[in-house]
Image: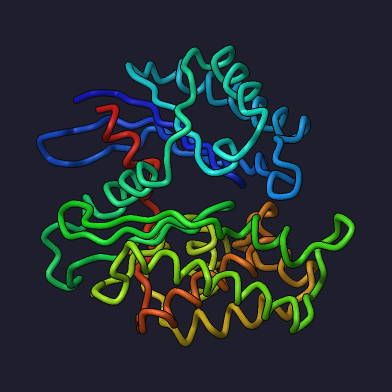
Amino acid sequence: MTRVAAVDCGTNSIRLLVADAHPETGELTDLDRRMTIVRLGQGVDRTGRLAPEALERTFAACREYAAVIKEHGAERLRFVATSASRDAENRDAFVRGVLDILGVEPEVITGDQEAEFSFTGATKELTGRDDLARPYLVVDIGGGSTEFVVGEERVRAARSVDVGCVRMTERHLVTDGTVTDPPTEDRIAAMRADIEAALDLAERTVPLHEARTLVGLAGSVTTVSAIAQDLPAYDSARIHHSRVSRDRVREITEWLLRSTHAERAAVPSMHPGRVDVIGAGALVLLSIMDRIGAEAVVVSEHDILDGIAWSVA
């Protein structure tokens, strides 16, 4: 058994997992799993740079995580950074800040590496289940990018494309720094066209239509599941491995895109940091399901963070 810590720093959120890894059984025993919305990717699509306030929010979360890692006595730590820090001109400031706080240099991984970690984290515990046909299509809908991975026990093909809930919101639903609430049909149509173009790009590399089980990861997907179940609060145990039909995803997406900020914020399972970006994230999920004809999505709480932890162990 090895006690490990993994940090996944994405466009919208930064997450920590401290766990005991049991290589013989293929199990991770969580000791601490937490997430903080930091919006590191704030404005990156427009300016090409990480905003000073976004960096400070991220460094504040890193200081909190450093204390948790020390408390649990993790033997190894890996910090992986994804889309926003990959795109930014001033990513060196980000790297220096993380190194000062946590003592490790963040690895700004490629989209293909991101996909490999996501697939491992999402499917390692699905092995041997007779009710889920293979190959799997694992879809990780992040803030700045979405990863598509097809495989059985291992990855067969993967592609990362630049559509995510934050990037699509900022590109199509923001005017003068304010989210259009609710957006016009023209804006939704433009966002949908962007998503469809990204799916065309993904399909050049990944045989999306060969998938027999769609596995959805990350906050947009888990939030859709929480809404579908009408949960009184966010409940990881009830969300993990839940299934949501395409019809239900369509109903929820249409409601999210018609609703106001106040109506979305009133959903009891909604994280405050997702209120303005959840409509775009749900539309990405629905567009994928429509494209491949998936009747349902299997929702996983285990994703790239778990894959990073296994890579350390």
